[in-house]
Length: 336
Image 1 (cartoon, rainbow, N blue to C red):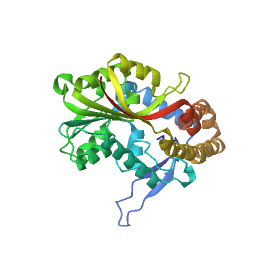
Image 2 (spheres, rainbow, N blue to C red; image 1 turned 120 degrees about the vertical axis):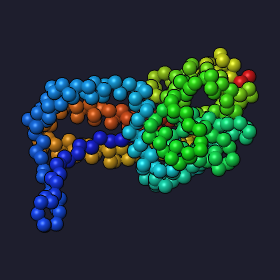
Image 3 (cartoon, one colour; image 1 turned 60 degrees about the vertical axis):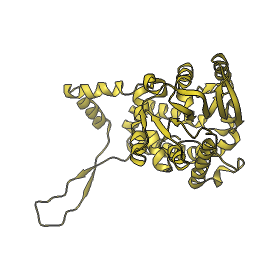
Image 4 (tube, rainbow, N blue to C red; image 1 turned 90 degrees about the vertical axis):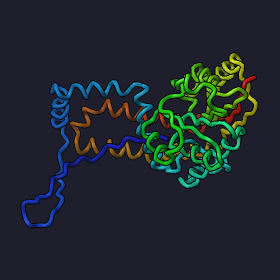
């Protein structure tokens, strides 16, 4: 899911006067956000030496590992849909209109998605790795079914959530591609990657999964793939994936295209962005231009970039574009 940037109304809060006998009262003092105020604020942070180390750390923290370790969008998504799942869900009514979709129905679809994955686990004796465990929805379901899950995620928010909810479940903190192989070689009877494989490096992930699976082990993959090289660069190209499987001696023993079943959630997100996200952003921009024209002038390029980013994110969840350029597959993969 995606987060829409909304220009906030900023205010400073005055501390209540406790030196008198009058009851404490909060007074809100509105601060004028002028071009001069912004310039002064930026300069005070940029040109004081004590601010340089944290400023430079901001750049270092935005590398791939930093983003995976603490992604605010995943945290917000988990708060909006608190069931523990971060997937698109599996709808049993593919033709439902987005206007008739609710957050409750999306949560039900997410649970159904997890149940379908759990049904594919046949090895009940050995550990199951949930690689990209999200907020722990699937981990909890596997526990209820008497299985032995191990959670893996590089995200700090997810780590805290899963450790809090399931303190006895082993947790691997990091990316699948960086898993300590001496410790986890042939450790799992089943590996599950549900809507996480798209973020993994294809050749490295395949090699690691082969090494951590026990002989005869099963890899359950549920994710979307690009069907054309011209598609938005999100997800692996299907032909690249199947070629890599064949080269490494893997075979797909079961596959199901569930694109139609995930489209209702995608269509709902797209509708929400079109009807709420973009209009609110436009309203905030116009209000800024009217109330603070000088500041709006200074930020025009930034506003344009944000508008373009929002539109590109909407294109990613446009159900028509998604169905044309991608397919969402449930796969069971084993060694030949």
